[in-house]
Length: 125
Image (cartoon, rainbow, N blue to C red; front, side, top):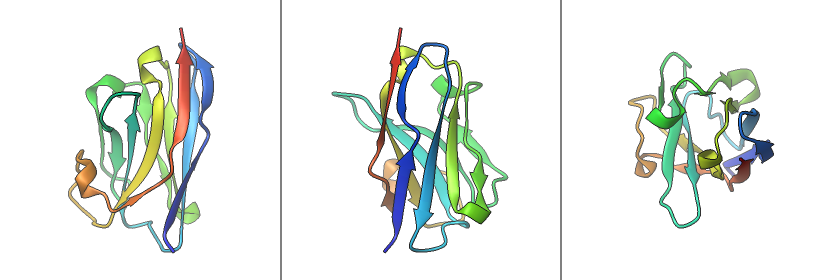
C-alpha cells in the first residue's frame, strides 16, 4: 500500500526555520515528481514546491522563492521541505504529494496521485 508520511511540523517564531520530511513507502517513488502543498483555514490548497525524480528541476510558488527549498534523498525515498525566514502567513497544514509521472512539473493538485495526511506548521509573529 502506497503511503506518504509527513513529519517535522510544529511551532516557530517568525524568522525561524523548520524542515519537513515526507517518507514514501509501499512503492518506489524515487522516479516520481514530488510536491508540497499547504492549506490555511478557509483557503484552498496552495502549491508550494515540486521536484522531479532526478532532482534536476524544481519549481516554487513566488511567495516562498529564496526562502524554501525542496531537496530529496532517493536512497531514503524521502523528500524534504526546508523552510527558512518563516512568516506568519506561512502558517498552514503542509501536505506532501507524489505525481506518478516523470514530467512535467505541475502546480495543480489535480496532477498528483498520492497524498500524505498533512503536518501543521504554525509561525507566530
